[in-house]
Amino acid sequence: MNKYLVKALVSRQGESASVRYVPMDIFELWKAHMQNTHDYQIRPLQVSLWVATEALDDATLRTPGTIREPVVKVSVVKKVGTFDVPVERYFAEADMNSILPKFLSHYGLKSTESKDTGRVRVTRGFLLPSEDVFEDEL
Image (cartoon, rainbow, N blue to C red):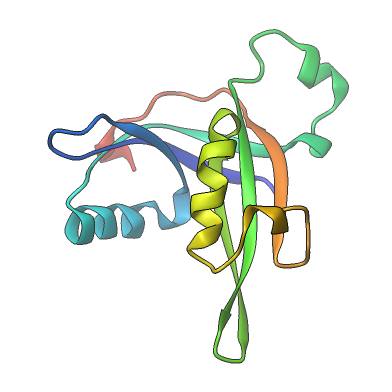
């Protein structure tokens, strides 16, 4: 399923900034949580449409300038009591090797379980070109 993502810079005093991709529909809640709970500064950069690779046609994949950046969706099934709760996070494809083990450890999973085991699903995709946004536009 396609999803609008906010690409944002996340930083703390004295630390270098990192990029996060957050679904637009939860961005304000996520931003408030990151600022109030973890003391991060959040700077939204742009809103883009994320599309899974298999949903893109060959012409789109080959057209120069059409695809901005590869972003991977990681879906996890989190156990909460007797319930299965789906969790989706988005990461830059280039950062997957370093981020995936840390992300999965939050859910008691190992990176060896990341091969679509039923609890973890990795979907490759791309952010399609978009306009830059300003914080007051979100």
